[in-house]
Image (cartoon, rainbow, N blue to C red; front, side, top):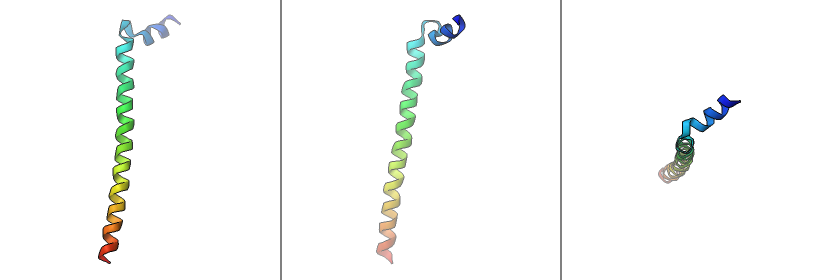
Length: 54
C-alpha cells in the first residue's frame, strides 16, 4: 500500500503534477468543444451559401 501512496504523492510534487494533468485535460476538453462548435457553424454557413446559389 505504501507504493500506491508514494505514486500519488509523487515525491512531494503531487500538487504540481496532478494539477498539470488537470489543466491539460481541461484544455483538451475545451479544444474539442470549440472545434465541434466551429464545425457546426461552418457547416451551417456552407448549407446557407449552397442554398443561395441554387
